[in-house]
Image (tube, rainbow, N blue to C red):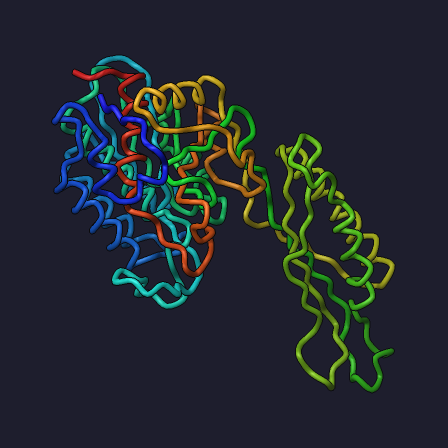
Length: 411
């Protein structure tokens, strides 16, 4: 098993240093060659980002890499472009799912690095390239020293950024073959000390959804606005009413937040009085049912105000994320694994207001999300100068490997 000797976090600043403190059986260890190959693989993924629902080449690249480590089976096109690799001991036991994400973001990268995104307007600005590589590192270790019972699933999930991928995977009939008893995920986290893992039992990521409110009236000549039906006054009244639904900015059981992210009225013109308007709202809360309740309140407000001003109203839902809730048992297994190999951990910065698509897996399995620190001053996620730190690959894979061994043992 891996043993990571206790060191100050500020000494963990290079892949070489990390590798020196990872000690264990040679068959389980990532070699220097592994680390070089995995780093190159991660950077190649970074060069070729694909958005949610478009991850065709990313999935193909993952499948090719998986074939080299000969899992028992590879399931493709699950929940869209998802890929699942099964390592089956052929001995009765639990099934553990480790999840990574395939998709990137519609963000133009501004990093000056050799592996900068080659796709205009798209980048891996959330670290999913690194998460995928951590899973492949785990796969190498499992292939070299197989589990003694149960199964391991390496789940490469599509469409995480839109909140639709995990649900699509779970609802795909192919998922019946890999129904998990336990599920774990790692997400890189700027703002936490490098190599430190933040996790906690209970709420770790809020539930959220995006709601679009479309108001439609009638355009008119700007000289005769009275001939039209403008949404201007309705939006001016609706916007503060929506924001007033927010309660308790502190993240507790009463937390709820309605954030207006975009407003548009008419077209940019001096000659036309507007006849339509649109509002984008992100709704967040600590529980799934709270989000649904707030959404209902927004709809009621919009319908009342639209009627008052003679407007038609339409609603569109998007980016629906369930709350991510860490199961107590899964959390404790992860903490025990990290303590055993010397990875510093705690609940720094948790829970988070941001959302994560992993929560859906926790509805049918005992699940835990782990947030692996990139450094206190590291660029934020969804930032154009964000890039995953390759030094985290051996740390993340060591955590997953120990979780697997603690639950399933080795031959």
